[in-house]
Amino acid sequence: PSCGCMSTTEHSPECPTGFIRNPHIARMDEDFLYHLGLGTKTHNLPEMFGDVKFVIVGGTPKRMENLAKYLLNEIKHKLPVGTQLSDLTGAADRYSMYKAGPIICVNHGMGNPSISILLHELIKLVHHAKCKNPVFIRLGTCGGLGVPGGTVVISDGVLNDKLNGEHEFKILGNVVPRPTKLDANLAQELKAVASPSDGFQTVIGKTYCADDFYEGQGRLDGAFCDYQEADKMRWLNMLQQRGVVNIEMESSMFAALTHNAGLKAGIICAAIVNRLNGDQITETKETLGEWQERPAKLLARYIRRQLGV
Ligand code: R2B
Ligand code: URA
Image (cartoon, rainbow, N blue to C red; front, side, top):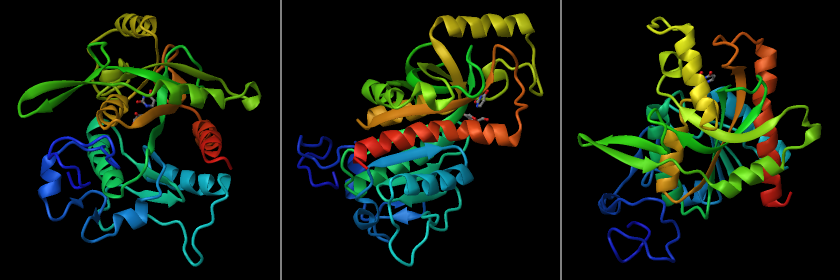
């Protein structure tokens, strides 16, 4: 491996990274992370990103930029004189990345395929940069199952359409299941920083990962729908009985890839609708904005605790 381990396939216990397991990477004289617009030859990745301790991913570029601004202030980090927060992805124009001291905030778009591309490149990025024990956290929105809009949901497991804790990768025509395990301690640590005085509820539970927003989540308001409301409710109730408290679209890929990399990872989302009451998202921009700040508040407290600031 490019980290200098003797074996081409395995890392020694002292290996500084160990996040990637791909003997081909070490044999390439350049690894260009195409969708991030960053490369091992064009950029000094250890210098740019070697200090990264927290990799935060979320759906939209704007939310990630605002998050980076907010966290910068929360951890009282000063950007180098004469610099300002800017998108660090090169000409790629697919994702946006902002760095606030030891934190990077990157948007992942919608759905498992989009977050997959990003995570492959972010895992290689923390590897090439020789980051020490970075924690990966997805901060997102979701549909709640039996919890009101505005509830913060911390995932302690991810179920797929077959209701098991695996993501089924399609590789060379084969189905390769990999566990969707998240770090149990991290979920507890995130929960522990919530307080009854927050003015919102924070719960821990299982997340159902769908491949689509409409039929894939049992909605009645897509362009197509061949089932009845009773079928939808039966399915949602069944999920709830399995411990599912929220539904979104990136958790299985996120959990499976970070677990495969041996990274500590967690997911914290704001519910923007209670799916037991309806499908449409009708809250005002202001309300949705305020709800989406809630997971960020817990995240900031967690990071401050970890950094001791
Ligand atoms: C939550 O919100 C998006 C769909 O509106 C999707 O990215 C997700 O997981
Ligand atoms: N994101 C989803 O995937 N589903 C919802 O219901 C809300 C946000």
